[in-house]
Image (spheres, protein in one colour):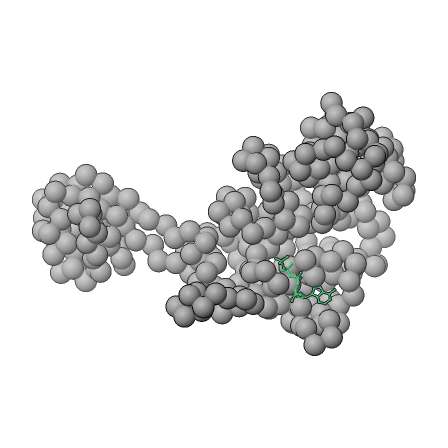
Length: 305
Ligand SMILES: Nc1ncnc2c1ncn2[C@@H]1O[C@H](COP(=O)(O)OP(=O)(O)OP(=O)(O)O)[C@@H](O)[C@H]1O
């Protein structure tokens, strides 16, 4: 578990992280979201003891990083996948990491296997594709078999296959009971990967909770209906107090009603339905709704909305 309590970081007059409190539970993937400059990387660095909070604290399994008895066996991180010696092989890079951290060399081949790099273990890491570099970075994070894992933008620049691999891998790590915190700009990807979300803006907490609740709370669910008797059904729904919008293609979008309610109204007035589908809001919509005022540099078009 990760617990931030009143976490604050100032760089001169810039408040990068501002009295931030949140909890990241074990056994789930938690997405860490926020507009550019929101303070995600700074928060991750403070979790890892790489930056000292100006005020407040952040605890890993109840302790600040500096007080962990076996830090690398407790928490692993992928912050920058290109952080390798280009001429070292993947295996030697990990051997060097293991030796520097007092971890058993036997872990190296295990983690190479875990991330699917065994066949290229003796190849120069400098020649690796971005996807392979990310896998190597993840292997490094796993060396100490930690219960807590942090990934900063792990899917940036990856192709769909690489993105899918990382998604499944993170979900598997969480299923093993680990705490997995992952920051990403790819919201649709986060909606699929993360069960919980922590959303920040301008260094402050905007929202935290389950992905489903966050999307449900910040967006409106509607029901799309297609029927050859649109006018008749539209009138009946409006009569029931539901809000109905007619689309140019003749379909109806009903707000304030469940698909069951719309179906019941249709049946009660003998209307034939060709489609009845609940429309859920997306994480993109929820994110824009939640972070609208927290974007550091906004285009005038967005700002004017
Ligand atoms: N070492 C530093 N010195 C001064 N200001 C900093 C430093 N590190 C971060 N900042 C500032 O703190 C704020 C938060 O930055 P941070 O990189 O944590 O945000 P982020 O959410 O990770 O952004 P992005 O999504 O763009 O990576 C920004 O205004 C940034 O300019």
